[in-house]
Length: 439
Image (tube, rainbow, N blue to C red; front, top):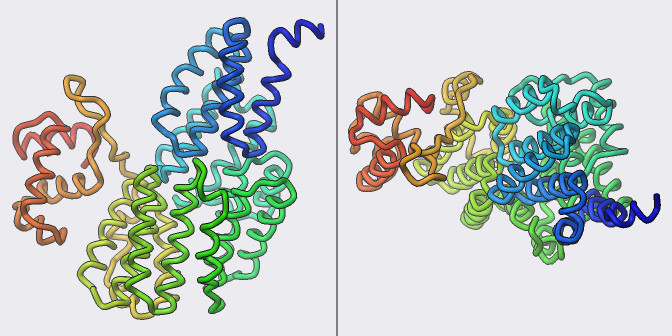
């Protein structure tokens, strides 16, 4: 009945969630929290929906610490309310986090779990199963498992045109564009991004419009167009000051770096790449960090600082191996070598198959400390690389030479490794790292 509908707050909840669908995340978050305070105690089903919406917002904005907290609460409330269907959407929120972080192995695990978890009911409707197909596209591309049939692409593109929110829409279009570029179809690569940009303008989705335009600028570099002044003016747009600004800034800095390298302004190009890396690290966007490291190496190679370039290439490859964003490495190196011919020698010296394990599938690197230690600390990718060299029998001095850092820096990392793994010797560190699947 109408009065019952109003008492439970359903119209307000539909409005709040609708704002998130339209990419108005700040307003949606405010409305969802307000709704929970007003109606959450009397409407458990609605509270579960509001919390699930917040999970999507936090995943979209790379607010992963907040996402973990709201996921726990959302799972508990939805279980109490017997809303099994919501668990499918929580899987999708976690999958968005995995893709945003660049952790393709984790993404694959989540997809498998979602499809086989009967409680989540994600495969019960065509809508949710197609949403999973759309999100799966990026991880399949990175792992070189992409179904490249035009029929499959058309099916997913039609779905996101009708139902895709910004992050899903961009992920799909970026993958299709990258795949076409890899087949030397530059026009087709730009065409799909122009389609995304037009969709964004029609639906008033400024974030999608900006991300699509940044990718278009990158493609135009192949035609000798840099638009460097336009790229700098881009930063003045309002969208670069909100919660989504960090990933947008990182993407913009990356294409600026590439444009500057192409114009042989290598010093400034390296500076922009470093800023992009900092932005990516701030939000744990591993895939963007890998790209930044490779662009930095390209600028350094172009400027003649070959040892620094070699170091950053090695670090980028180790990171890509752990994240399993292999196709990113192949795409970006091909792009850099084409736009910065003087970098070809340093990249040609890298055996990609050997460097990233011939597309092997190692376990993820992030290992929590033992329960008796402070929770939340992780081994970094550099520390994992150090452990591997320790396992090979290298001394601190030899490791420092291989990694282009000081011996004191290696000693500091070793102390951190001992603390995180709760061990007291190098032998124990290797044993514990092997037990946890890190090396």
